Image (cartoon, rainbow, N blue to C red; front, side):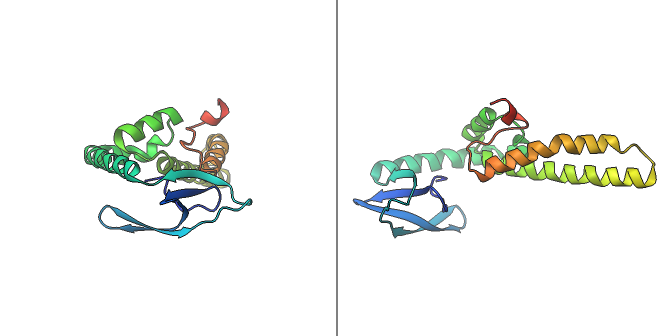
Length: 176
């Protein structure tokens, strides 16, 4: 239930038995359970509501169907887990399809791809410095590669932090 998350802004309102609640804590209980701590919430004018969930029998049935479907997908997607960090570079539309088909979280895969991109940028700058100091190889190619990757990593990380779902792929943010 990815919509049940602890957030600072635009918090989710859960309506249960004619009362409003909000999530204050999420605890993962092995092997596949999650426990949520809810507290009553009186909406004030300062609160900006993110999503409203009507919790009842229909929601619980839909949640259970979703759990059965994702559990089946998780078993079949062992190989996809190995390539999941690389799927973060794909376009948002493709990441959305991969989430539906294989259960790969587009936000997590984008975070992983941005981390890989950042490591490549740091390695590029390190190679540039080695090339400049030793003169053993040209320093411009690592510098150029780092300067190409840097804006994309910064913008995609910003979109992840802004909770854009699904986040854009490699340089996709320039075209939409």
